[in-house]
Amino acid sequence: MLDGMSRVVRAAVSLAVCVIPAGAAEIDKPTVAWIETALNRWETACRRYLNLPSHPLPWVILFDERAAWHVNPEKAWLPPHRQLKSSVKFVGRKYPLIQVEHRDGRLWVPDRDPLPVKSGGAAMPYDNDRNVFFELALPSLWRRESGVPPSRDLDETVLGFALHELTHTRQLAGVVGRIEAMRSRSVLPESVNDNLIENTFGKNAEYKKMFDDEFGHLSRALLADDPKLIREAISEALAASQRRRERFFVGDYQGWSGLDDIFLVMEGMGMWVHYRMARDHAPKGEDWRRTATVLGSRGDTWSQLEGLALILLIDRFVPGWQARFLAPGFPSPFAVLREALNAPQIRINQAAPSASPRSP
Image 1 (cartoon, helix red, strand yellow):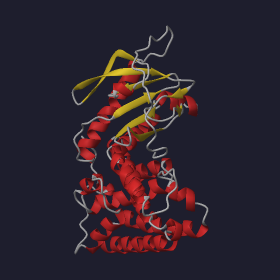
Image 2 (spheres, helix red, strand yellow):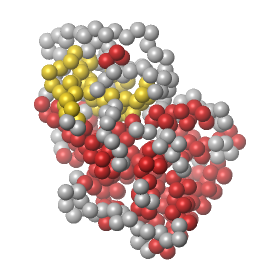
Image 3 (tube, one colour):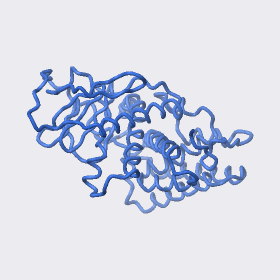
Image 4 (spheres, helix red, strand yellow):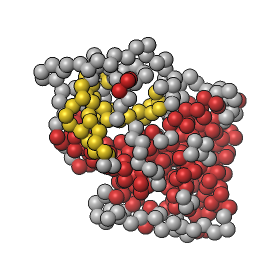
């Protein structure tokens, strides 16, 4: 997600609109409808989950194996392209679709090298890290790679992935600056991403055991209803986190606690938005534990799993937490949980996962 920050801006950008030859990629009505669904889900996520205004819409790049379609791009950055007659709506405004052909089988994106054309997606900074774009493979490419037929489950998975990464577009610009500032105080690799800590310590048996213990306490707190048991589990999770950091984030890794906080918040919020959408669109009567379990099985990295557990707990016990974690200098999730633990009484939010009402 943060690989290759601060790439040198291209010396010249062609603004010519290319003539697309006969037989070139066109966009069909079902794909346009899917894009509008994704944008409508994002508007809902901003308004109902994150308590954010829907605008500004970031630069959105959606693609299949043949071409990419841009929504709200900065046209001065675009390579040769074509504006289609097709458009999509977002909060009452029409956005024309801009078509860009793949180059040598790779996806053009602003301010960095072309990307592989494959399922997945990411939010990335550009323009000296001042702005953020979002790129995502369309469901047809996910189906083609996996060999599965069209299904509601796959469409919902890709829509959830889109909301996860779109959440990062509201965080990433501030995070890039924080990480760059950390470089003056800590030894950081040239390339930093949300899996850095797992990639660094994943094969260390002692670290993994400490992480598993910590995550286990968070899970117990999340599943408990008794305030006393919740307090005990949160307290044990916080103590385990402190032991892990004091043991490993020293020497060459001094200051990595800050990286841990950043990526747990970012991935936790992305996963939480995906979870909220999945709950809103889950089959009637589905238990929240099943929704969370299915989502957890798809987000199996440490930062995603622990981040989701932390944000679910914070959402349960800290009213109005979203504004704090969407601010550029957002706090440590462990510090916010410690605040909740030190409150005279833990008050369980009625929108807790086990009691979350279905959306109308």
